[in-house]
Amino acid sequence: MIKKNEEIVAALNVLAEIFYNRPTMAQVQKLIESGVFEYWPQWPNSTKDDSHLKVLAKLKHQLSINSIEDIDNDFLQLFISPKAKKAYPWGSVYTSKVNRLHGETTRAYVEFCKQQQLTFSSAQTEPLDHFGLMLPALSVCLEQNIANGKAAEELLAVHLLPWARRFLECVSIFSTSDYYNHVATLTTLLFDHLESRLSQPVISIRLYK
Image 1 (spheres, helix red, strand yellow):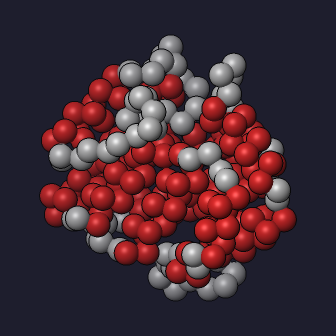
Image 2 (image 1 turned 45 degrees about the horizontal axis):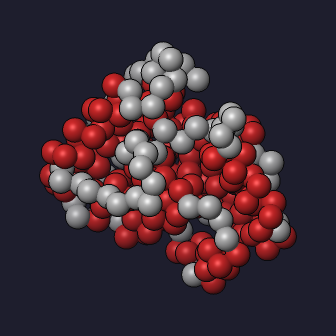
């Protein structure tokens, strides 16, 4: 069972900001000055040689050397490009045979959000199964311990993890800056930790992208 963890909640909110919002110098500077990396979730028995700590160090380094133009261009070609996004951030693009938005898995997730009374505001009208919107939903489920933790488990095992690693793989493959590559790796490691705490298996879904 996944228990409430303030560090994991904070990490999910930081990752949501990175994956959802177009980067700005103010955002990157805030990330550097927040000290969030100093309080990133530590796994039991972790050491300075652990992989997630190495990735954190690399990410901090990239923040200090990448120009905001490089990071912004990477964000645009990965998630925004009107021609062909390199890493589509919506779950149903991966789970739908025709790679469509608002697919069957989107509708199932919308119903889940209604059942758990999860509401989120977005500046854009788009499907709720956007990776950057599902992370704060998971954060809320954990922070409020909705349904004694079962809501967070269902969100992960049924609605997010079945496709999220493929999305993160696309980010890593097609990222033109080490910034998003390292963020994707860090997110994958966090998901590995969360999955190891689940009391139910992640459902198996065929992916089409």
